[in-house]
Image (tube, rainbow, N blue to C red; front, side, top):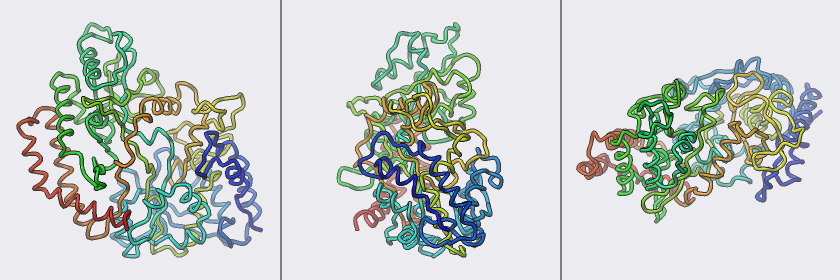
Length: 559
């Protein structure tokens, strides 16, 4: 007996809420997930020993099959062997997973070891394998091209490619092959990662307005430093702080965009007016931005620890004792504050600031997907089975159960007229908070798809993280998103390009990072040493670095 997961998708497609160009703000992926899960469970329970033929049919194998999967272990999953979704999905598909894990910190090292040793699993999952590695190892036959599998069995993948043609294009190497499936995350908040947060009780205490320009921002920091906003009679306030553990806690991440596009997601690259890949860190406006940051630092408005501390140290700076930190560079509050407490609720985002020229923008991840999240290796005994197993994880109800949990445990339907984040009737309420250690689902271990409608249909209270992030994003960042034509898309590199680019990139970006800090703290004079800095970049063969990027970009996007 063969079952398919058609009920839930039919509801979505009929409503045109999920995978069509004319999407409604009332998407109800979660609202109907229970029906889809029930249908899937019935398929699993009624098909032991049944047919495994046909795309979208369950089980995937007549007899129990095993997939050897190398994955990044989520910090929020207790035990993948006993995990409720693992057991449910095994029953549905008749495929047992033989897990091998790496932590996120050791991921690249373990991936490189597997690739070099030849001891490969059937599937590599969750590693965000770079386009360069996909292409190099794909052309060597170590990663299998998925094109024919997608065409024959990609029930869910083909629908996603139809809905997001930019993802299909960015996933396709210049040789025409697709080597991986991607994570697609359309949470509005994740499109704008470079945010800054300000402690609003200090603004109220000092009768200050939220700054909207770099000049107003500087004046607010000065007031925080000199006017005792925490009221303890001590000059212990820290006007602004950040850290070095991730790119968006860096002090320059948010502020430099008032001077020129400063897109941390593309290694400070941008498209020039004539359609070429370029960098921002040798431009006069970049110098102007560094001079502004140096002026803030020289006045004691930036904590020196910002250039050395990790997230735990940043959080301790914010949380220990009475309030001391006014402004923090970070994507989310949980990076710098304890969300089980109350202090984070008083921090609100600083809107995109207008610079001296009037430029006001925020980097915007128009692609907003993570490629390289599911690859099939040459060691896979049954590539078809491996692909069908992954393709089904994109199915709306399976996706919900895999990453949010089963109904009644991970989420529930609204009962009291709750509103979603977009102000429309909500479709679901989260029961297991994001970031909770649990054993009900995989917490984004596999490739997945979260449509915008899913996020906007979430019911959340006024002080819950999802609502705060959504409202702050829509108010302070979405209106100022960068021009799309400035965004550098994901680029594939061939083996020769990748080898040459690797050394060039490390040399150049290490130098840029070092000099950015030295210019800001005044260890090196911006005015006296800028020309030397630019000439050093030229001597590091920045031109060749850009030439390689443009050669690869043109091969992929302008064939």
